[in-house]
Length: 253
Ligand code: NAP
Image 1 (cartoon, helix red, strand yellow):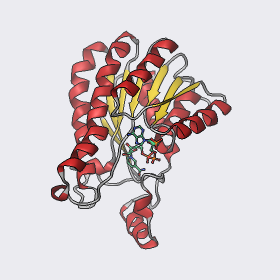
Image 2 (image 1 turned 120 degrees about the horizontal axis):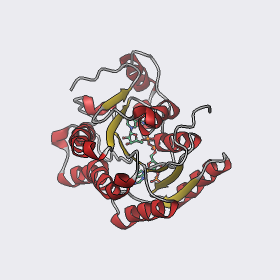
Image 3 (image 1 turned 90 degrees about the vertical axis):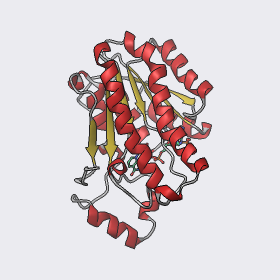
Image 4 (image 1 turned 90 degrees about the horizontal axis):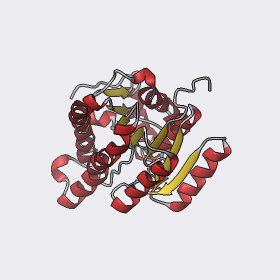
């Protein structure tokens, strides 16, 4: 890894013991950042922390369900111990419901929006006192190509991801004067546990691949460099943007 753009930086990446979050933590760590990783389940936190530490990266692992205020506080307490916070990557999302928007009941709606949208907003707000002190404050939300799709299978999930596009624009406007950039990355179909349902049968997979101009799924390590770029000095004049990495899938709402 030649690039070391994040030496001396401290980063929080949520939902980072697997998939895209883990790849982001690895990339930020490889570029020189100290990274606080987390997820809901302690065994996952221990495994991922060991994995990254064994690779020589400076990583601290904590249990944090992003909807839990006390557990979110612990992320910031840890950042304080390390010396502050420069980069927040809000990556957690759930999708407990498959179906169209109008078939989604209130309980499901609340769960999806609580994790996918509200926790991203709260994390960003809680990070502000730290990011304002940083010379290079960065907030990066992980949305999805689904944000751009009107979908009968991923209805409320897609809507929650569209909400993040708006959150990015709104917060970026307010934080511009503080020198804090706020951006959003929208991955396409990435081969992780989260998306396995989209590959359940050969037939579903074939249909899925037909839609993707590049004709293949993405890998988590193909998303991480975009986050490292936005987090670094190289991304210093980019804010309020929703950036898609989806193998050519269309991005018009
Ligand atoms: P993944 O491989 O299934 O990993 C999910 C990670 O999130 C795990 O570390 C999991 O660990 C943690 N997690 C789940 N719920 C959490 C919560 N409430 N609080 C904290 N941590 C939580 O998923 P992924 O595919 O990398 O997805 C990551 C992000 O990318 C999500 O925002 C997703 O919407 C987005 N995305 C994914 C795709 C795709 O095709 N994979 C496409 C577009 C966007 P624990 O079980 O220990 O909590």
